[in-house]
Length: 317
Image (cartoon, rainbow, N blue to C red; front, side, top):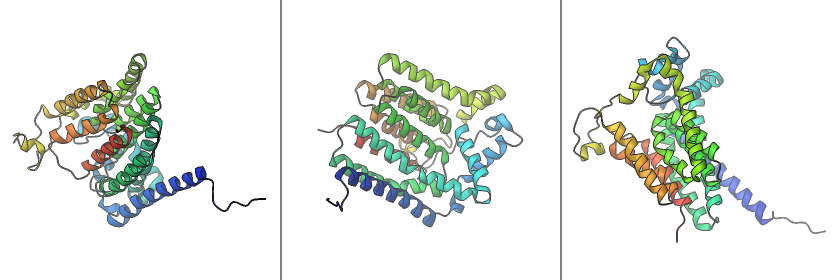
């Protein structure tokens, strides 16, 4: 009888992969909790206010009465979950939940890439290096800023990317709908659904629209002023790209948000037409940053994740 001391190659690869993702998870949580303790969640008060208002006295009028809440119902529900499960440690659970989202999001990119192309050493190295570079940016997003809306939007878009790569239109549609319901700027990612075959793409777009309507319609019907939230103006930072483009108004110009969405969708449709749907997320976020009046550091997490998705999923000669 032969005794094998080393695992078979396939099992060895699985162990290596599991170890790599465990290290990624551990690094993001360890760096986050040590570098930025839960008390540093800079935007926590917005999500706490939204959660308390929705389940307190304001109900479905929360967005109409607080237009500064620039996120969606899914982000509020996730915050409420941390309140129920976390109790006195809600802020810590909130931060940890955000930190954990990075690892499955990167894993989904790997699965999507394996479905599109033969997995090779180059893609493995790109994924590993990209994931390592993502850790500090994700720590900024999750622990320093505490933007659960952006984290959920990125994670759900990763689900959609995997679903498109594996030809699952309804999964892609509803995942993208949840992303939009967490952070409305994710609507610029919808051109990815055009990557499906004609009949299936329209079903996917319809399913995505339905998912968005289910989440937002109760708020709009209860308080039509909810729609005015999109017009909420924030300060135009002195270092914003808008200033460089010659827009020197003190606050967000009225055309800015529609232009971000429209241009992002147009560029995304053009990329899909050229067969480059994995680039849609990167293009949409690039357009957003180009025309955004704010310059928050946590924006880099989404851009880096989108760049990693492009590098891993797009074939190279």
